[in-house]
Image (cartoon, rainbow, N blue to C red; front, side, top):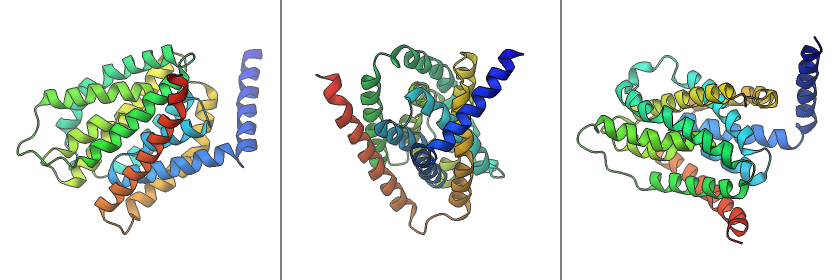
Length: 273
């Protein structure tokens, strides 16, 4: 009985904490999640890299907390974004990618759990480099290959992406590059990526919960951010920007480059001191 009352008191205290933070940290977090969700809905990627990079640079929340919030946002907004349009998804490519993705998420979570307490600056540097690589791969503009890639290539991209997903909820870079090489319509690529990231988010959240690391404050922060993510998803789906897809991608890449460079600049002196 006491334990139940304590849990209820903790929930209320975290909720009140969120209200106190609403004028500062929480409102910044909600704004960043809104931008990241909108970008991902429009072009198929960007949520994890934008939110994790910005929150880490501003030191709003620990990496472990932010990664869970991103996973919950990506899962909930992903369902909304692809609902009613499943026929446009390359299901086989998604399945092959997830074959490599899922076990690598577990490995990434293990590494994060090992590094998070004692190697915060190293993690921040790795995150910055991962974001820069992610932005660079989208700048490569790979020419679509003539035939669909073999399943092993999707599984390999998924395994690298899963490692990043386990560490930072940032599965994007290798998976984005792999899908954009395929001889597929842009809409199919975008929706397939959203489904992969949705699955990645669900699996990661389930694994964190199985480890006993899914804490109440993570869920409450996510609850505060959920309406913003839904609104951004709706806007991205029904009110996309008037700019072309290429222009939107370039703007997102520019933002990612700034975030990645800022993280590297901030963490490198501590790592190499």
